Amino acid sequence: MPHLLILAQPLPPRSLENLGDFTEERPLSTPYGEAGPFALRQPVSGDGVWVLPYFGGPARTDPRATLWAAKELGVQRILAWDSVIGLDHDLDRGQIIIPRDYIGWTKHQPSTFFEETGAGYISQVPPFCPDISAVIARQLPEAKGVVYLGGEGPRRETAAEARMFRQWGADVRGLNLVPETYLAKELELCFGAVGVVIAHGADRSPSTAGGEIRDADRIILAALPAISSDLELTQSCDCDHLQTGPRQRGVLSQDWHEWR
Ligand SMILES: [Zn+2]
Image (cartoon, rainbow, N blue to C red; front, side, top):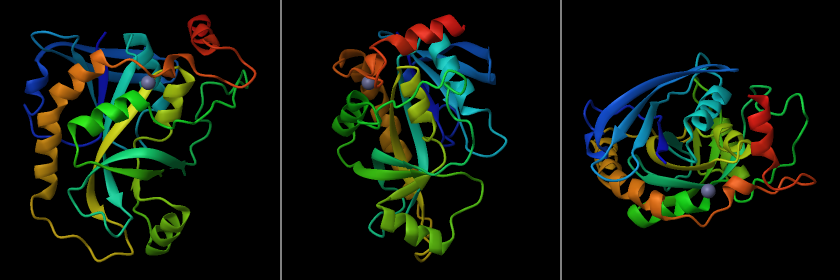
């Protein structure tokens, strides 16, 4: 089964060619709007990868459309590649990160598939799929585990907000993983992420550009085929059968099929 790569980082043309040949493009309609088009890349052997360019901003499609479409495509595992602001003063431009936990600081409401049924209390432990995170950590040993603050764009944080976010325990701030990671949980999909620090937080002196982001992108691009094939082999998480408080295992997926 192909997995899905959500790309919130602009890349040069042809940089994904090592994931396989481009074989199909598919837009999808969902109850939450249009999603895609998703582009399928098919390697010589293996399941292939759906790729979705994805950039934060108020005009962006409802994030629920993306997760719904992933479920429609039959995807179980979603890997997101985000660009983040380094709030932690030790995080420099070009640092590769793996979000280990998150703080939800978005104000879009509602951001749930359960606004009518009221199902909830879905555990956020672990916050990201442990299998995907482990595969990324294995293939990108230089990546640093961080706490991710999911905010909204397009504006940047103020210096006062950057200090506050750090006091809360956030290491980076980004726009593309929250609410996506918990929407994925609601549909019992695996969601994991990798990121690159592209700028310093507003309370730090501005970072100067010296090709660090391009270098980090190259490292991640080179690791993507191995990450993809590892994802096909590793299957120990139970994201597809989440415990949901009083509800029973597998009930969420069943609901999803009924809603369709
Ligand atoms: Zn998982």
